[in-house]
Length: 172
Image (cartoon, rainbow, N blue to C red):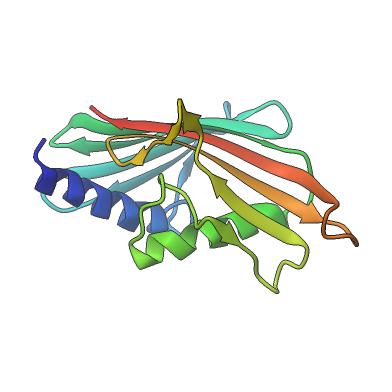
């Protein structure tokens, strides 16, 4: 795929992801497996499909695919684990992701390097690209990332990990 085509896919991903998981787009839920799926039809034969399944009590895994005329051309796999029962953590994560998606910023498919918000005191989101050898891989065509959310205690040095996301994606 040429560079212009890759840029169009990236722009489409940011639009679709901003509407779907981090937005208010409706999703389908499989009542037997708990899987949820977001479908977002784009222009010029593009389709965004994000499927997420629960794993155990506090984890999830899934894939996000972009199809062009019915053929998968880009994929991202992810897994997460949450160690806190606070339902605001997911809302906070979505807000962090929305910061990049709505601004059209690609940061390995995730949110900004760091995000805090007074509406969620004590929570800190960080996007930490996984190191491959001695470099970060953040390009749209081949990337890895790791997101974490920490809860700060009374002492700013006393952080407690409450959510972790591992992400990998590539152009087909």
